Image 1 (tube, rainbow, N blue to C red):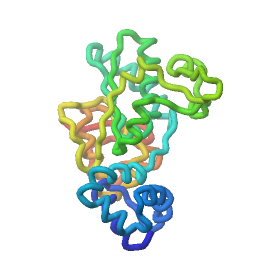
Image 2: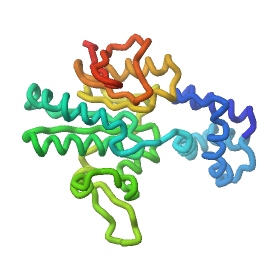
Image 3: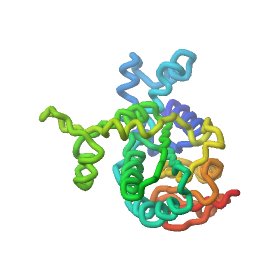
Image 4: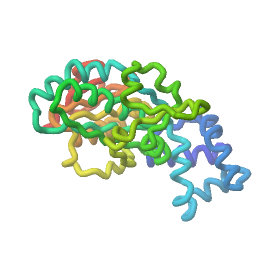
Length: 274
């Protein structure tokens, strides 16, 4: 990839999606895009970029290029302290004070689905022990490819090997083919999550009345500059009920920002917006 092409592509991604791509990321871009460039019949990046930014390519291929560029690393029960806080501190009080209102949760960067399905397992286990209790989960991501993977809910067995056996039995189906080591979220649980493509920087494209009690936006802000981080957090506050909780990643914080949140636990913030 020549320097001019890298600058053009990285500037576009930063401008449209808020993701920083410094020069050190050039080799990463090449490793993710070289195969796509060749598959479209181009032998260099300049005609490739001319195509994807043109009228036809912008519709047919640009979304696929964005999917390849965005990072989608995640795990089941990643940062377990968040889910311990939910179970031990938040959910008991919520059930007591909101007997007739379903809990609404938004996984705002759901990637391939491990996060929203983890949330589902936590809430479902709580529901079984605390009837009646209702909840809904909305999951979003900027990548259509990862949203499709999340919707399918299919994972290699090693992705769930660390889970307790009772969770494996309750929420996953194992392939009947002994040569297939994949598992799949049971259909009755897959249908409990609604999916939506959302660009957190520009087009949330959801009514503000669609307010949530919990928003997980973890390990996303690290790809934005400080001003974009503050902008995104303030935007999320509008979709979070007063007193609702925002969960950030372990290396993210609101320190130094003008945002309506008060920290209640490491990387967990309560919305003070009225």
